[in-house]
Length: 104
Image (cartoon, rainbow, N blue to C red; front, top):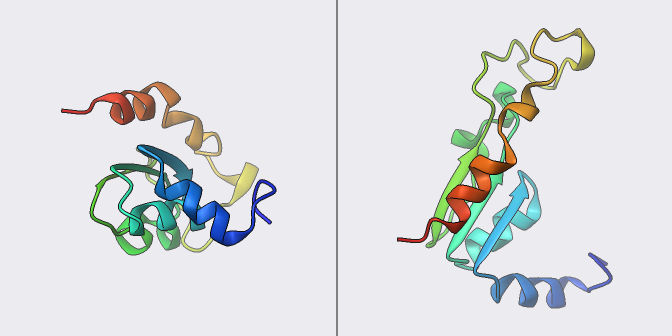
């Protein structure tokens, strides 16, 4: 169950959304595939996680957000060993929210 909903109910709820913001997981892909008008995906800068490979596909407006850093990791985050360890804070909720509400 997702948020107390079965999968079919969750998909039905997503299909009613005007916008969805989610990390690079199932909900962002489901929302995009359902044609939600605005889908914002939050992605890690790790090379193997890049939205060029794993970004959502759909008919609505889709924007992926990832930190603007040169990530030294290839397959998984290096954690506290990384000089860019706090990189996800660089995305900024304000930037994502501004895109979501900026309907033409």
